[in-house]
Image (tube, rainbow over the protein chains, first blue to last red):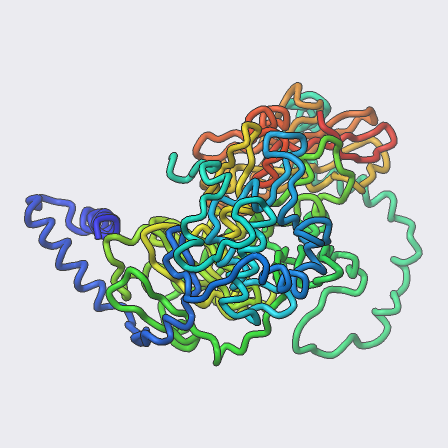
Length: 194
Length: 422
């Protein structure tokens, strides 16, 4: 709660300074600020309805690098190849390159070459992102149409095409989170450098 | 007023005092000059056709004049997937600071959803004590606030990274930037109502489009100035700009302003979505990439004259353009009419607002010789828009996103304007 309370406190402090700038002892001042916080919260319209747990579960698609959010299910590259050929190849090309959409695999060189070749294998830092993005956005003409097993399989195929896992490795909630991508350490968080 | 003293230049290449057009004496002398060319016109002696019969009746929703039909968004989309692409604001055809809603740039990943607001809700969950669900009717009852702010795609102006200067209209080069008045519910109010837990540090925002686009935003920004916008430029947001609900994140790159917003997930870490890892990260020459480079740094460009315009003859012109900064207000815009050898301060159109387009203007006496025009913005944080060489020195050539270098226009002896690296 520190960040929120701290920010609120700063705002309220500014408000109180304006209202009662004269001769208030610091302790008294803090007590007033706390009372004001509670009062402000009650002043909001409060029109939000309690969100049903089942709705949250149904809508929440977020997947995190540690595997949080990955659903049950599994698949391997061999199964994934057939799914890829049917749903992905027309845009992304045979084996992940040469199509009208972005290159997914088959980088001819790395990120410091001219020009750099950005693919899943050279650029993407987390394997979980591949599952997440495929599940939420792909295939472009029928997003949401693949089941979790199919998405795990296509994820496995793309990791295999990029030389990150072998053809027989099964991807599921546990194994996918353990895949270390080649460019895992390739990013600098410039926001938190500030 | 002594005309000669007013017309003295303040910088090389014929730049004049920024307030020149406001000085009455000169306004009258210009008016006298231009009136000459029209004076003997036959039109003034009789009625034009539209003066001889009653005009059109009222319309329920206005349209631009048919004579302005070329002022349009230029669409660049994948023909295999027409909903995946960009449309550009024609900055070269506009003046002032507000982008008409119908000309606001678009970047969609899988088309524009046609959302029935009665079947759209906002879910707020995760690290909160009270997960909440809001209907659009609920949200319309909350206290609202408005902010005039620009939205700029992180990939705007990326043709600037190319080794050869691209020759295209300024809007079709830099027009993934637009500015509107956004009105809605401050996000802070809903977060306070849901009672955010202390461990929460990030907010994942998600849209209801076919791509179910999502992005992670630091909580401190959400509490600072983010708005759940319901209105744009006074009317409900248009479908292509996020109807019925759009997250506005003032000063930050466009991808964070999630359209068709339906879910906000409070977390202790970012989700590492495709659009915050594979895209919207800036590759540096050493192979590392800048991530979470949210703020759009100060930028300016001359929109008139710019590529495609032609100066008919030497004489007095107004240089006009736009400046903006994701860090706050524009403090100053300087213009050069001699390729950067000397600079003069442009007039800023009031009010100058934080994280908002700022129109700058300066009068210019063109002597008919070849020259290069430039503008550079300085914001209230002291940040100075860099020359292209300096930006490339710092970021290399393959950052793709966040290009904000000084733009140079060469005016030829024939008055033709082209884009140059100078």
